[in-house]
Length: 197
Length: 365
Image 1: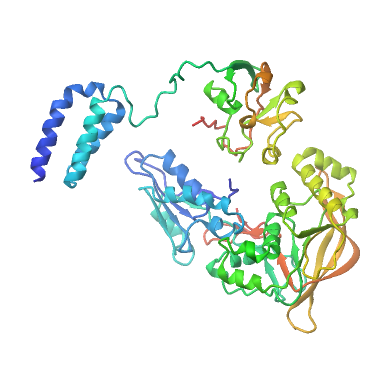
Image 2: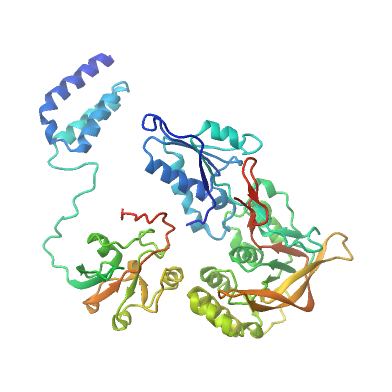
């Protein structure tokens, strides 16, 4: 019984082999899984081979990985503001941030080294930024008690410090300059720099 | 994020490390243990992690230390469960290091042993009367109301008087004060242990005193927890105005730590807003008592062997350089009557056979 199914699967795979070069890494994994599960009951086998076929015939879709982040939003124009980051060595990075995005997310999208250990859930102080101009600091909404609780713990706290994940880009902030402090309190050992994930 | 005590020990060198997967044993299944397991599984391909705990149930203080009225903190259990369900991770309960297994046996069985078993003992005051009944460590009381198997038969005395004294002003002190003073109707909808809820329903405790050796600027509690307790309905907060005067050294401390400044401001506002005593015998009160250190515990005349109060010495602060101030006794004493004392003054770890231990500091060296 198993042999019969195995040979059916085998012949299907042999037919599909020339297409292999179009498979994504994900597709290869499905292929391996199909081999490994030939001993299982038949409904499982049918499902495996069906999904395998779907993976082969789909058009450039990457099943396992997330979808491309460059999808268009139906042609609508999002207003962007100019933001300058000044890193701990004094180097300036100029970026454009769409209105409504928070500064931490904007930094990550531009590969700026702003850590966000708690991913914006107000449970750490690693996205601490210093608003260099008081004029811009005053344009921001007052920090909530929760933000202040975390800011209390930030390394190198100043009078114009904020958490980047709580600063939302708006037109009035066009031209804002944000300094990134020289360190964060994340108990990271040996100067390890965590990559945003 | 938890602050944790963990030590890595490699018991043998890897000769063919790539062919042999890493075997790790983590002693202790609280947050420290689980976050460590998570990182090891992610960082080392093929690594196997065994988490052992002396209790049959995992999660350590997340299960037994978080107050019942703070359920959102326990959400971490979901993440820990996912780690435990990892195919290369096992949780083994009911295994005690020291009695079921020795450290040397673990070092023979595993490449790496991680000690993440926390600090299950308490600091002592070392003052007369400390062994009187009615005096508990806050840890025992917390384990009692959280249903920890070691303390379900604690039976704390909540009926002899209307006053309880808590030594310490950190977040644990606030936790136990809240549980003592919250209306039981509110506690009934939490996961507080049934035996504790029944006992609290019959409790006569209406006044809780939080005693600190130093002043409001040095209090160990955090802003979020303080805001919570100050906002409890029908709970009257009592703080002496005189305790709120600040010295230049206090101002310096507040300048270096914004957290301390915000806490001081919260306490000042609470003192100003405190209403004058109403003649309600059932009124619940939380007193913040500053600049008092316990000198000895007083024994009851009617009930021998039981605590009836604390003898407190007034203190003043002295600078010891580096911006720190310590409490120094003034020789003036006063008594505070109570039928229960909870010590929330910090923890100590327990030694393990096979490793040097600092008994003064209470930790593995």
